[in-house]
Amino acid sequence: MTASSNIDDNILVVSDQAVAKLKALIEDEGNDELKLRVFVTGGGCSGFQYGFTFDEFAAEDDAVVEKDGVEVLVDSLSYSYLVGSRIDFVENLEGARFVVDNPNADTTCGCGSSFSM
Image (cartoon, rainbow, N blue to C red):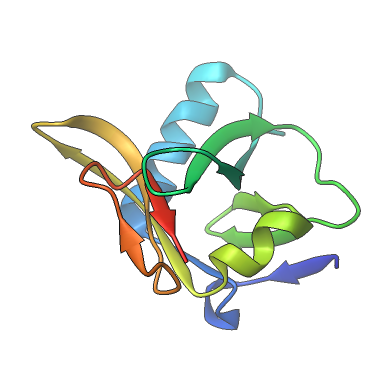
């Protein structure tokens, strides 16, 4: 499922704050090839949890969302869990982190890093 998409295709919306933070992190690493990989794994207090990592390469079955020169990758297994979600970067009393606002989630935990469907 290779998909080169933009913000309007409803795969995944990436906020301006997330793009700004990603650009800063990529610049700090000194590697313009880095892309943010967003994925879902089993675990967490609600059943599934979100994960974030940097990757230099998109896999053949990744969905690719590009915004303002930054690419976000979603693997084919995580895709159905994340369609329509919004990736944001927040800084608050709990710390600074990427978060997922997922309209598909039935419940989320208090910290927002795990969910159930």
